[in-house]
Amino acid sequence: MPRPKAASGFAETVKTVVYAVVIALVIRTFLFEPFNIPSGSMIPTLLVGDYLFVSKYSYGYSRYSLPFGMPLIPGPGRAWFSNPERGDVAVFKLPADNRTDYIKRIVGLPGDTIQLRESVLYVNGEPIRRQRVEDAVYTENGVVRRAVRYRETLPDGCSYHVIEQTERASQDTTPLFTIPPGHYFAMGDNRDRSRDSRFLDEVGMIPVENLVGRAELIFFSVDGSAWKMWEWFSTLRGSRMFTGIR
Image (cartoon, rainbow, N blue to C red; front, side, top):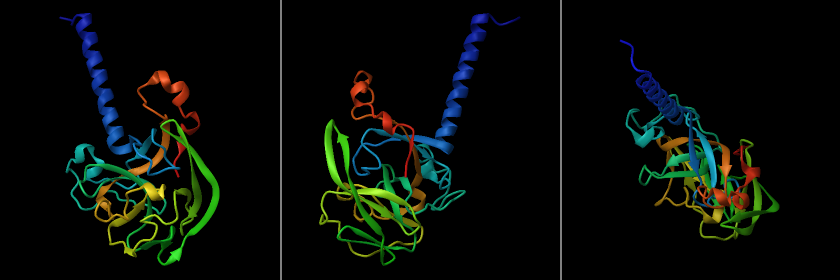
């Protein structure tokens, strides 16, 4: 006896929803995951209110690549591992709790030595190229702000901008750090307002298994609350949308 049309239509709808959820979970788990930026530690590269896609496959997979940190991949280590490069903007789980998502720039690889001397970054004993460029001007909570901006170029050739509030903040001169095997050194581009690997008790070196993925693309940006759609006319940052991250 054929099923009633209404029941058949409902079953098809449920099937379609289930397929859509499964596809979304697969994409989020293995390909791309959306993140938003809640703090200013990566200004000028990333602003508060930026929404971005992070590629989960860039560094291979560990338990922290999976939803809720499910221990399906034994650690330490990664499956299908690919080495991060100096200059990558990476999302990782904070080593202190293995739960909180952090996003910083990787400046040091396993075996490197890292040190800051009066704001100048030294990699393996050599100062990186650092050039003063035009000041950074950005909006934060509706306020226009200005900061001194530099272009840094790492030994591998990766070039990016950082900002400084002062040249003599507490972490603008550091001890010499030696990065152990299987770890990475990450810093925020807003050098004086970033808790990062310089703060050993709070962040420290990033274990390889804590890497979640590489930031790839800003797909949405708003200077305010994203859910307040009626304010988008004045808060939407259209020029930042669909721009690559470097």
